[in-house]
Length: 438
Image (cartoon, rainbow, N blue to C red; front, side, top):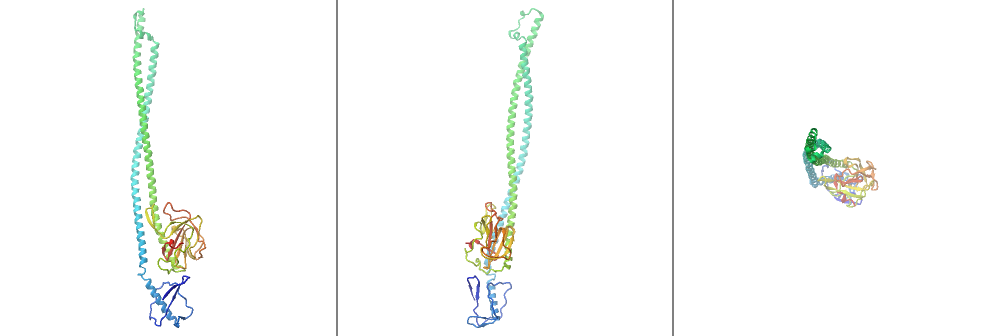
């Protein structure tokens, strides 16, 4: 049995028949698809140099071929594929473990922030209490200053009044001394003595008032200095209180962002895993319904490498396979690539085929999946608009839709409103598109 590939990519099978045909051959399992089987036009087929062969003998030969094919599709030959999937599964499990550690880190940070916020709350209460005490002290000191200042003004007025009175009452007598010869009558003598005593008493009282006035002035200065000191301390306390509130608000904001990022991280993990699983299930389901069945060998989709045109002109911002997301500190596995293009750019098939799916699909946005006669599938996601429908036969120049918003961006530097998600699948297994694009 010889396999030859024609220019049209169809496989012809030429059977060299011998005279002896094995006897009873069991029928192959149901559901085994064989691509490129020739259709025989009549009840018999002429082989080269061997005469006519009956349809019964041809049926036996075909059954033998299917039986041999079943051997090649046995678990032994599928072991490598199973090993590859096992490797991918280990990688995904490692990513999940990394995500769990990242989530634990966020939980620990939340606990630290809770402790910090409680401490800041206590500090704020203590600082506010001290501020209140200082404000009461300022009011009390101000009241005391007002009282002392009132007494000071009263003493000052008394002192000035005494001085004025002394000037008006024969100050010369007090200054020149008492001389009885100046007086001729008894009454004059008595008045002089009284005046002298009055002047002496008022002078003593004036000195006392002057001393109290000076002391009161010094008290006012001390109280004013104390007030200024209390005001300065109050300003320091208010500054600490503002810093405390800023730190508390910052911690509160960080707590909210940490919780939000934690929830978002959980949702992204769940969404990525669910979307990837669902897309794989969808492709498997569509593969059974596809008009063209894949019979290409492993890691070969049936066409020459670096031969497919790009579905849209742009820059690759997300590559196939393992990708590290620094902001989330974890690895993810991409089954396709993401291409950033000009806004409103049209998306074209990399090769003619049939539309087997068109519509919205989870966080892949609007999606178009094509089945190609060469036996592979291509997926076009994140479209803002779809221009084809299920069952349409499209050529390489048929627009499938328009690029749309990036719903799979996990880095702040990524994203935008003009991105295409593109996959190539050999059956349900994704392959690196960059190996096939020009």
